Length: 141
Length: 147
Figure 1 (cartoon, rainbow over the protein chains, first blue to last red):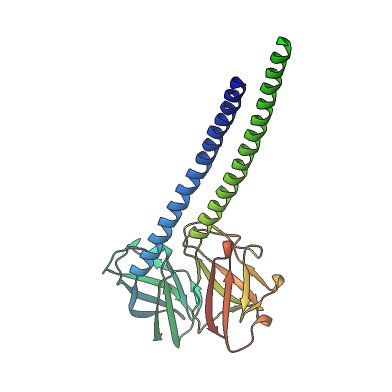
Figure 2 (figure 1 turned 30 degrees about the vertical axis):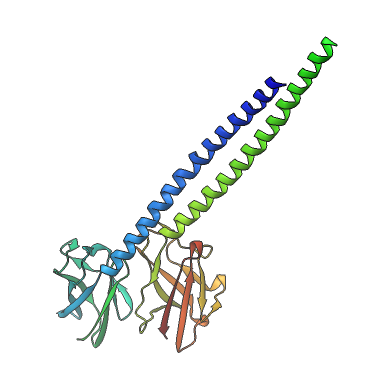
């Protein structure tokens, strides 16, 4: 009778140990990864709060029947921005653009150009950073 | 009598092994199910936390191509987004847009990239509207614009 009890409790004890291993083995990595995702989200939101750009001036130059547009953008936030990840819209339409420096550091200015764009008149520029922060600028050719 | 006592012990032993084995099997099975569910929930939570997007149009100038209005849609999260009619639902002024009335220019969208969302012009009359896009894990963005 005593041996039967010992055997039964041994089997249950081993199974509890296996269950604990299964639980910790699968749950702990998942919890760690969720924690990392949460940290990344918090960091993204902090970056967004600390990001700001200001389009300080726009110049245009005739290029045959079209125009080259040159925008001066200032990083007025405190996060370094990757210029290659900007999105430029003129009158609401996406434009491919050129840039000389890859990064725009806080309190620095850079030039972004959109070349050979047809049409004159009133223009409305919108530049959007990699994390969705944007600035507008109205100008007339 | 001696044989009976040994036989009874053997029967108790076998019964104890069977009962404890059954209890152990059920216990491990439940643990497996619970840990699988929690892991899957964790993966969904990760996807929700990593996914973020924004409609980046100029609200005063919504461009059009052929018979569609074009909305620019930027991945501002930290994971790739599958941009398709299966993963995104589109609402204009609270009304869902039919599956056939919108489509995306790319199938996937890496962080910081943009894609075009085409919505049939027949779905949007002139005036002020609110566009709401609901994506994976119910992550959503709302955008008010004028046509």
